[in-house]
Length: 184
Ligand SMILES: CC(C)(COP(=O)(O)OP(=O)(O)OC[C@H]1O[C@@H](n2cnc3c(N)ncnc32)[C@H](O)[C@@H]1OP(=O)(O)O)[C@@H](O)C(=O)NCCC(=O)NCCS
Image (cartoon, rainbow, N blue to C red; front, top):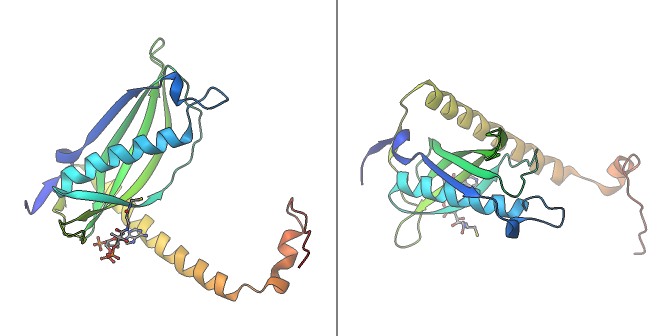
């Protein structure tokens, strides 16, 4: 296995035409189609860096802020932003293009954590990441911050959950659009 690889080695783009069979009943592209394409590009990018098969472990920052139309060209740009021992954070920028006007829309940026596995299915070490420009450095630092915040959030939330008392917190439902119709 190579000891280190540059970000550029595994940078990957998938471009796909949004065809009618990808659409939902409203005529826009299904969120699930987009998720599947993001998983595919994350896999291609991560397995190239790792030189091994990988699995998807976690997905962050998936927000569908703009609808994607049938007939648009969708490009998913992926690069390794951060590596741990066996895990890699893959940043994916999704851009659509109207083929007639050339107008481009940035629809979302998401982060997939992928883990490399050996032939026995155990997590295996991946090459170190060589950062080649300021963008690589910025993305790596952002990934470290995101990891720290996620860990802190998980601890906070686990703590809140263990302290949750139904009667004490029931007032939180007062301003929500729910009806309590509890029969037992
Ligand atoms: C994720 C998985 C590999 C962890 O295996 P494990 O035996 O617990 O191994 P480890 O604890 O050593 O974790 C391996 C790496 O995953 C990372 N990891 C584990 N859970 C994670 C999570 N929820 N979010 C981000 N990273 C995670 C660890 O930090 C570790 O990273 P590092 O090696 O860079 O330090 C294992 O649970 C798995 O195979 N899950 C199923 C994945 C899958 O099948 N995905 C397809 C979706 S259907």
